Length: 162
Image 1 (cartoon, rainbow, N blue to C red):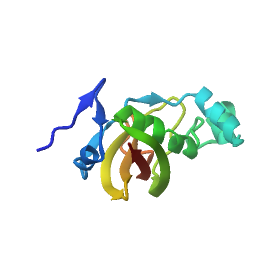
Image 2: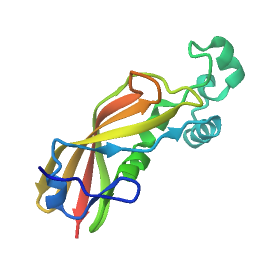
Image 3: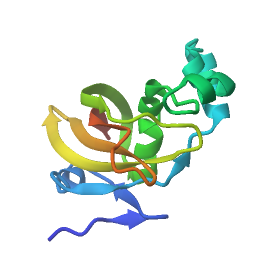
């Protein structure tokens, strides 16, 4: 049985395509928790020009929202995938990494302000495409103390190893 290589706070360390491929079908790890506060939600609203009240108006949300508070933008949760992935794995000896795609992505539950979320990652599939490493990471964004995930799907990265 192949042992996962960890360094620094449980981070998985991968140094080559061959090492990466040895994890196919296996869980790669779980990120640390990240709190979603109102400042982060507001900054995301400013960056994306999406200022819908359900995200940025705590007073109105407390009265009119079924969640009784503001919620994170769904795309804010999506945008945190890179942060969570970097928290789980360190891939060395690459020239660059490119986001390639998203598949089967589903929002399961709203992330209310003050919630903590994290990602669980599994290597779904890996391919060597003429020297480019195509990696499909099956992910689940969990909300602390909630059974249903906030988001799940498969994100695809292209790694260009040296």
